[in-house]
Image (tube, one colour):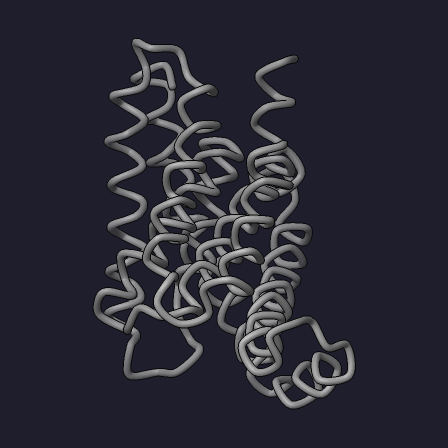
Length: 224
């Protein structure tokens, strides 16, 4: 129980506060420091979740899922806003747990941005994909059992990602959260949000069946 409280405090309270603090206090060059802090903080609930003897196996799986996510973002780089990252992060959370999903999302962002470009937006991307993976883990039973719920979650994940990045846009422009500008940003970004939704649904429909049997065999074989 105590471990769960600590994990949820880190992911749902401390990490968002660090992201917002970094955006307000270090709008230009502080993103690298904030990104490192997010990775360190995300590792705490990750390691609290696992028994010592299984940690190495889970780290290997984390590396594999993150690498697939990063590779997917590279491969689809020519197509703006059409990436398999969210789908892979959701699948990671579904099958390996909320903390695993969060860390997969956060690492996918910061690693792939060495190619796509690091900036003040990176911590917000890390949190966006991370929290999508986190809630996928919390809702894993429903997502695994129901294809409709999985599709709906993937669509909502596109909306959530867009909204969180719109928060960054407003804070970057004004230095504080301006609800009027945020509303304008949300409306302006509607076509992009729709692309996120369509992309997520397409990739989850393609990738979820491909990953399902392989992941379940791995979990059975290695007792993860």
